[in-house]
Image 1 (tube, rainbow, N blue to C red):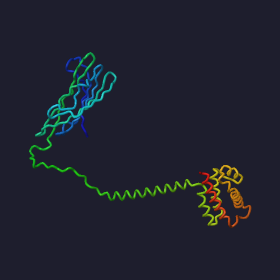
Image 2: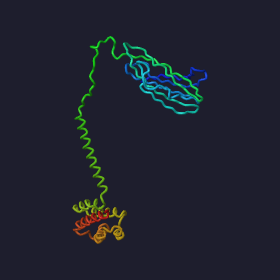
Image 3: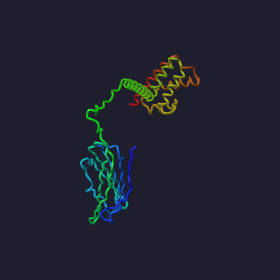
Length: 291
């Protein structure tokens, strides 16, 4: 867990006692564990009361501060608040010290210039910050003792079992997709197209009632309601593709009435061939309705 030390302090400019009170929050990382090339980030948040402002043009820029320390990056944010201005500064330092052994080093204080109307100027300073740095190679080691390790290479993984698993998953997905498409296609089939296999099967097995009910259901789905013989003329007017089949449809209603109400003997022995033929013709007619 990264440690952050910070102080909330009120700083008074050293030039005159009339300098504005500035609230400063100074955030730093842990002061240890650094070596040559390490980057150390400091963050400063401050509130400057009006009419004073931070003089952005005079803030530090990228570049060396001394032989072993440089500012690698500098960024700031500024927004106004009631009674003044708030700033957030981010300074990235990079160190390049010559370290025969572990040493305590110090990042110098950071001056922050302030300006106000009528040319007033003051300066506040962020305190210096000490930290410990250590050499990359122990000083008592000779060059022969230093092991230069090769660049790390990732170990090749066996992907065959993963490929096989992906193939099985792909096949399963394809089968599931095929089943879904097939079921969706069945749901989208037109009423007489769905009824035709049922009528044919019932006709082969001599099941008159099942064949009649399947055909009645197709008629009802096509009409959008329960269709009776007295409504046939209106049905054919709204769906002219079925008009050429009017005689056969009337015969069907008569045969269905005789069968279900037992008013007359059952249909003739060749009823099945006629009903299958009529159902197939209705399937063709409903296709023409959809065009």
